[in-house]
Image (tube, rainbow, N blue to C red):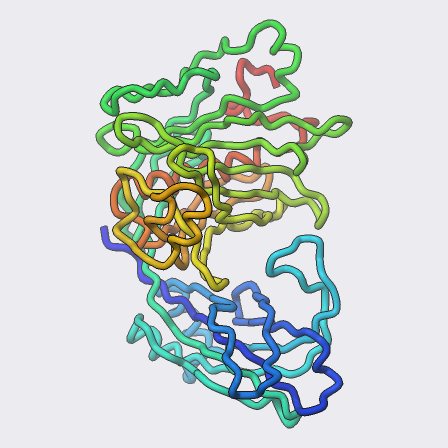
Length: 436
């Protein structure tokens, strides 16, 4: 089935010029990007003391992704004008949040704003690369100038939909518009510590479904740890093509009923490579209450030996409302690298060899993850969840590629349950021998 058409509205190459002898020149600034119906984004913006002769920061600062259907709905709401307004606010930075990353701003005084009109009809007709605005713009009559580049880029994605909650061993469909077809099946089970037996691919073992894996000592502590969960992804022929296995138990911090950031639970995402299961990624998750009740996560890409790692995603999701698990290597000056294997994600090449060589692996930088990698929906705690997974076309060259992202999405979804307060009982599909 063909991928679904998506478009990304990209904002980049930001630079700020202040009037001469301005008292603001010793301060720092950031931009806030707003597009109706989508979460706002923020990014720092550099001051250019040398004026327009200075080189601007040649990178992507913000990006909004919309499917063709979302663009059509946005165009319908805009009426006869068929346009939408991308608003860029320039604000003075006055503080930092504890979350780090692009969420460093706790507030800021508005310096000025720019409105960029998006011709949705033209974007829909082309669904391709086009420059919307490029160059310097004046910010009102203040003498402040902002350099920006706003463009539309095609970003086709494969879309997959779980037909049920991952712990119920559902089918997974590939979706395009109103058409869907089955591509994978999932099998959730409980794993003994030595169950991942690495044999020939035709006989790759599955985790045991025995309910007697706890010995008498473990029985005393079973209700205070969640361990041994695994989910295996099969293609339609029944062959296992990816898996997610809980390798670090989810346990409450001393004196609490929740998994803390200091002691997170973890999953390995596994792929079949040269007749064995090999780790491809590691997902950690915990319950974070520094900014309300959140599910924190970190996803690292692993080298072939499974030792070196490069972080690809680190953020959090509301445990009440849910949200999206997102891996997107769009902003920043340097794309991240991914490990090479017998199931390469295409034949990409790039300038990431220097970054990779720093990790002691010659093949570590043979491939690059660029732009949008994947996203999956995660429902709030206690809600019925049927994850929707989007994967950038450039990162899928074979069935195993797509399956690895589906397994990662399943692990992220199950982490919401694994991090549930230990004072609350899990649903029966997630309880082993009904010990919890």
